[in-house]
Image (cartoon, rainbow, N blue to C red; front, side):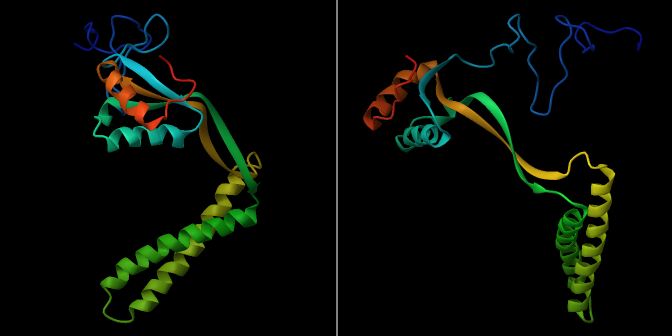
Length: 193
């Protein structure tokens, strides 16, 4: 019956008894009393902490080269910061040019697809696709920028950066990983014991 709900189905705003709907990556764990999700897997141990990702990556690569089961490891970035780097000013003219370039690539692709099945002059079909794509792309680029109403007159690129990268290993494999790292001499001074 629609009016009744069982205790196993998800109910918005209900904590505890109702389970959460699955997310894009699978089932979502309900947060615990501390606000963090429940543990999902075996306990882990931090075998090293490094100031940059390449250092942590070298450690995992060293473990892999020595036949360590690296599927039991993870690199965890901590103290994450979102950095948005402003690349330049966005004007209607620039938006039109960017749109024309994007449209030209798409038009070229469509022109090549139609050109494959053309009996006559396939080069003309490809060029027509390129030109039509560029024109439509320019129009859409200009209209899209005009619709922002001047609220975002710049282009940018976003990246997430961590201040520290920890290499964690399942607890059962921690001693083996530490022995392999002692040969490398790669343990950082911030290594957790």
